[in-house]
Image (cartoon, rainbow, N blue to C red):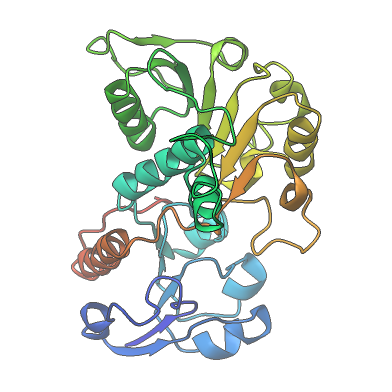
Length: 319
């Protein structure tokens, strides 16, 4: 049985191994695959793994042997799942592998916005502390989280874990979600509609899936509802926000700052407006990428395939 990994480098740049998947057949692993080479590389393959390489109808229709697509991520919008279902091709994703790492990154961005650790460290190394007449100094306002309110858009496993950590910081929680689970154990929590959340929150963090109804949910209109002192965080999906609208809001002082790990197009163009936006932290989509999280991802992907081959499929997104 032929198995192909189309874009394995980001999952495993060399610090993991593919042995768990290699045991199922003849495995070909490609670091990256341009669209023009997908069909050629996948001819005769029954199993394909993809992270971000798109598998649309025009491609899938040329792969008659294909039975299973393993998405090496939680989001599966890179695959035409409806066409795959019509063809009888199972599509499985990997949920839950990166919750702790994404939450950790969310607070890394928030704490940097509050404390400006890197800037102050750079200042000290440049000699500013040694030249200071006082025992301390700060170059930016420093912000305490206790008593502040965080609005969490999307209250699944990641959103709830963000709420747990925010609670440890003494924050109040406002949640917005398509479905409202029982959160009665949280004494610092309330559900709200989106506009209310945006108006009342000191921090707005998005953790919802990317669907047509959530694309561009953070835009010029929603940003204008936020406090001028508020921070915006996105460690979820880039297209949940409109890059230009966020840049404008930062540059015009509509909100105070942003910490984002994703952009609407990745890799971004060199002229993305957020690169020059005021008080905007940007990291290159690394919230998921701790070795621990990638190891879990690899293990779940292996288990997904094993379960499928044993006719007990799990994590199938196009049943």
